[in-house]
Every structure is written in C-alpha cells, then in structure tokens.
Length: 175
Image (cartoon, rainbow, N blue to C red; front, side, top):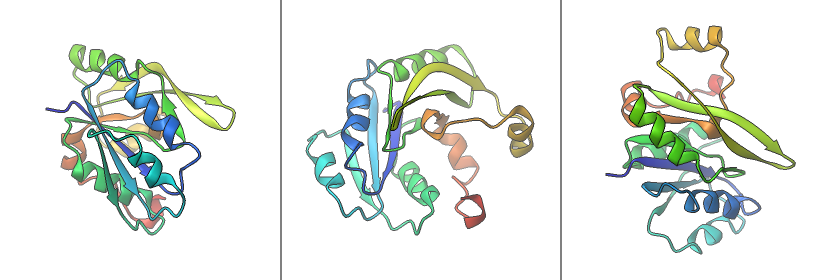
C-alpha cells in the first residue's frame, strides 16, 4: 500500500514543475505516488511532467473554473495512499520531509502534519520544522482560535479524514 499520495495541481507551471517533482523523487522515503492535476495548461508543463517517465507519477485533467479545491479533490479521489500530501507546483520540499513525516506518524496518534515555510526568492522551500495536532471540534473554530497559519504545501493529512468530511469545500466563498 502506498503511504503518501502527493497531489500537485498545475496550470502553466513549466518554470517550476521540474524542481517540484525532483524534490519528491529525491526524498529519502520512497513509498509515495505523485498525482498531477492539470487545469488546462497551455505551456510545456505536461511535456515536462511526462519527461520524467516515472510510473509513480499519474496525470489527470480538469477544468477547475478557478477553484483549485476542485483540482485537489480530484487528486484525493484518484489517490491510493493512506496519507495525502499537498504540494503546489511552484514549491518544493526538503529531501527528508516524508521520512520525518513517517516517523511522526509511527510515534503519534495524529490527524495531520504541517510545518513552517522558508521563503527563497521566487519560490519556497519547505523545511522540516514539523508540527502536528489532533483536531478539536468545531474544527473551524479550533483553527481560528489556535491560529490557522498552515502553508498548503506543508500539509500531510489522513486520507480517511478528508473522505469523512466530504473532501475540500469547493464553494466560491472559500477561495
């Protein structure tokens, strides 16, 4: 069973997508899949993704009509892993990220993992200053009171939890 499904929505991402994908391929931890969700790119993004010739990378098309949550939800639906990791196409990870996440998952009963972002000129490198939490109800109130400073590309969450809550809200008011 695949442990981590990494969902990468793309739209005209040719400038950064190679670095993004390479940051996953170069992970010390290898039990993952990459799910690319392409929102009608018109540049070389898909050609670049296909050039990796890696069976652990799957590509799906969508017209998300400006609602990136639709792209992420398609990725969740197509995923095979027990844990979902989100990575924006212009971001990349430290090579130890998934290894550290695996250790946290083994040692704790948690729902999700997240960490700080380190901004690097035009794009971001995500560093392994990991945090985790057991969600408290109501979740929105908990996040608002606890401070919802969670970088999307840092999140790793149980797939079963996302399915249980009906995936990510796709209403326009949530954009």
